[in-house]
Length: 167
Image 1: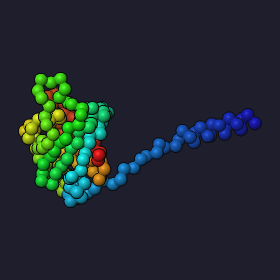
Image 2: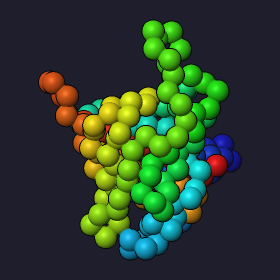
Image 3: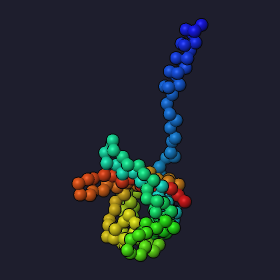
Image 4: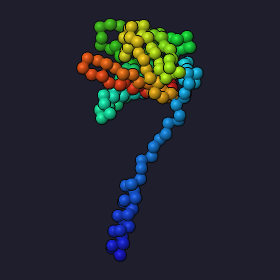
């Protein structure tokens, strides 16, 4: 009797430990420039988190800077990239006044909507005036957007992946 109980207990443990974790599937990403543009424009996007990928084995997943998480980003049909700063001030403690909300640059979709080109026209948190950024549109739906770019700095190269959600 005791041997049967141990065998049943061992079998149940083996079955439970072999179960795979539930995978939460994302809805399919939009494709085609018209569909991507429709999801991108006139939407309030809020930064959810940033991942810095140094290698397949070295990834820094963070919630992003707290001062940016209440900022709202908008891409307008006119080609303007706008930001509305929230109450968390990224410029606190710096000897310069914080920038005003409004346009910080221009944007355009390229390569059938798979590349988002931004030209920054003034300093705002995370962007420098004159910077031209080519983001790969990794994933986009009406409610979520994930974009990435390669960053080259002295002594290191990494991929920055930003995830935004619709407000």
